[in-house]
Image 1: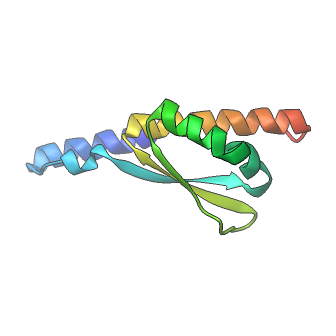
Image 2: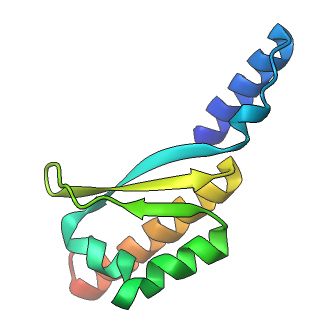
Length: 102
């Protein structure tokens, strides 16, 4: 869905004669269940660092919680952001299965 929105926005910029290059970088907020945040961050931030490096994104984990969820801000190219979200989602599913939550 994010790729569709990005593509549509780029086409709109192109047809309007507007420079869409500023849309090369996107930021999304990915909400992480509080009980999974430790698994996503990893020991001394190792897992988060590996995701940053593998996907080529900037990730900031918010400390505040809303309804037992923590915000994870992911910035990079759309493809990189989607890759990071996929890695995080797989990690959460794996952790839930390990803990018998999923």
